[in-house]
Length: 271
Image 1: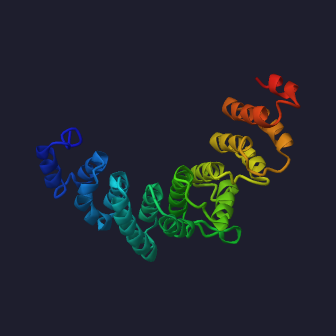
Image 2: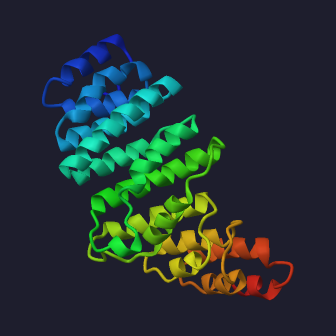
Image 3: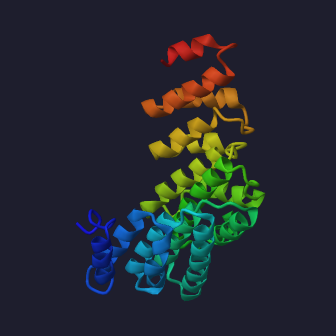
């Protein structure tokens, strides 16, 4: 109801009133969906509210950042809140801030670099995997997956090699296995690697051994990219034999690009 009337002057007045009451979270969500940069000021203060409210505010701010000026303003707000949440150890909130930070449509390499530095701070390296804040990690990979797409679409300088190394580890590490968000983390990390043509070496084969179907599908997609993959022909055969049709379909696309001229029988056998 709030959202449907939000584009009129009366509707905006209702939203402003709702921001002061028990429907604050709903009002913030509705304002974000309007996607009007001039309304950022209505939501900005909520970035310092309680955990649930500020997560909603972060998402709304990212939705409203539709101009270069708005992107710069929202990035400053999110960077400041991310630092505060990191200092306080409020990682659930930090993860939502990180995801929003990665979604902004940046125009400059400096903006990308600032976001990248914050996001990679939550990605553990192999020797630190025992001490993982899962909420922070999944927020970081959500943000980096979005950031990788923005960098590619806007032809900005690529993300750093250390970032890709950390994403390769996040895409293939199986811990913490008890947390259901672990699979989502691997999916998003593998998706980011595919976007950046960085699912290199043994990463696709390792992804094809994952229990999660979507991780295996993204690993199969990687086999059809320009990434430097170890023993691509052999790994494509593994993907073509996967029990999941979606994985086999992506493998067929890779086979069509790299092997069709030399190995027709493989393609016919797996159609």
